[in-house]
Length: 245
Image (cartoon, rainbow, N blue to C red; front, side, top):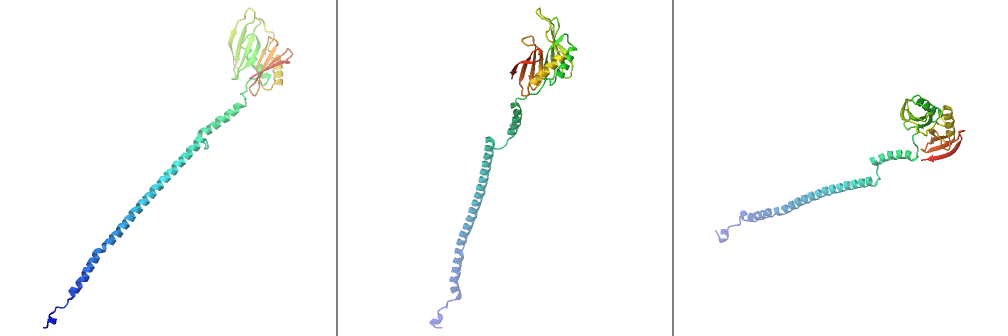
């Protein structure tokens, strides 16, 4: 065999070795980019989650802020009286009641005709001695009637709204007492009440025999709560007028 022939040829194994090593090196180096991409992806997911969570938290915070603002607005409206409140509605009811009071009107009582006064005096006369000299209406519908005897003894009787009469006070005559000059009989009552109501609209709350400057006096309660005191002479003509609140 020649020296040339003795040289060993290059076997395929030797030539294949290099690619194998290169492939090995390539496969060893490839995971690094994948890991970086994986890390980038994972980081992006984490950042996305954080951003999403932050967005949710921010949205919740904004919603809470809006709710607080709405609550403050409603509270401000309530405090400023711009929104209706129960106490405002209640006050409105109190206002309606006070409006009625502002008119000055009062609940009427007394007599709208002479017949009512005559009936009260007749009922009182059944339990009291003497002649009737004064009759006065009470707000509860009762009447109080004063009597005097010829000796000067005085008796006061009360006639309730249902017509029941009773004596509520008596007083013996003093040394200077005398018999009444004017007596409230049915005719006198009728004349006095008619003259008073013709002069002043309202109800008669008192009729009396006045032993002073005039023989008679009548008090009329008007619809707006005024008491008008009228003095009448012996002919039942009005001679003076006085108004009390």
